[in-house]
Length: 145
Length: 145
Length: 145
Length: 145
Image: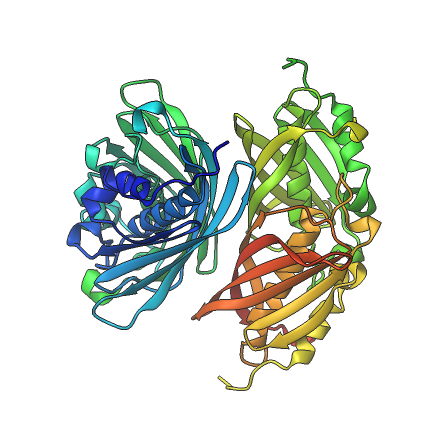
């Protein structure tokens, strides 16, 4: 297996598709095993009380975890989510969300990442959610390379 | 405390706001302790491979769990998510998602629901994710009643 | 790969070792993808209030999940736990615990099981915990076959 | 409500009962919101391959989380586990386990702690599991004060 790692551009390519792009996910930082992804508040991303929807928070955390894991994998491999768990710690009531993920362990084809999600923008940054994600590495299908 | 339960219309009111409404969540069934919420595929709800995004699947599961728990609560109380966990079992590659939630336990102000999420629409329905959600019941703020 | 499945005796062999044997885990039922494991209360298995300790409940659930997954695998393969999650629903205050596990999905080398844990013995059986476990199938090392 | 916190002796009292005492849990450190609990390997605490059993690892993590949360609570309140989730990252193959817990958030009566579990003793310490626990604070029953 090549020892060459995935280029940061893969994260951008993943992020440019589907829900992430439509919601406005922005990749702030990518390093092998680390990622930071941000999102600005919009009314169509909120829940009943007007804060970021738990599913949107989870989607951002999932994306950050996927980028962190994938950026540490050999070129041509991608991490897909086996399972994730999120604790919602306080209302995500800011104008911005930032998810900071780091790979805790990569063992064979299984990786685990933790993600801290902060809310801020119009107020001091505050931890609003904490996520653990288990990912499985698989070969990127030829049509996506 | 009143023994009167929340009316089904509260679920509709919750669902008519923010991300759920924008994504097109449809409440199919509400009973005390049970809920079914569906979602049609759109390109802006997908991930890299073109299937439903894990965060969108989670959002749907969360909404169904919230409706199931809330519909069993006394009038004026609402369930908010403490934490949730989702296992992604197979690609959500259909044209439709359906999340079926049921309350496993309500004890004091803490409730637990399980949610099965199926994909289908253009193909036979198949279980694609399984979610457990812990919720906390709180008084619905006056401005939302 | 052989289509022959693991014999029920493998579950007994796994259970006869270490903590499970010392605590008194009893395999009640094994079928491919299903397992039931029971445990009688002893003072050295309890927590502060005198009920079964959460870690012991989890150990029993883990064992049941492992047996359920492993019993559905080809001969010579065993399931090891990647992660698990337990919700404690009510005090495990009976004289007996029973964990009933079933495989939700087996996909490649990754399996997911759910486990319902009941307490009873000296009182009517009641659901006291719910567990989801993700397992990875690997080849049983030669010295254990 | 008193602003006086629980004394470290409560952690010792909790630990002196039932499974924790029988298995040999040792409280190494207690501070408000933090705890470290250690455990030496014994054959009756292992799984099939001779490593610490996943349930025992979970029990230790749960105990450490409970001590961390409880030590930050007002005198007379105790944290009980609502749910927990553990990722098993590598074999717990050392002669010692150490669980280090810290409170991530305490909000109303709900607290969340993360726990890193290391294995070592006869070899360099290595992270072998990661746990997130959600706890609920309740009044310590009079007979336990």
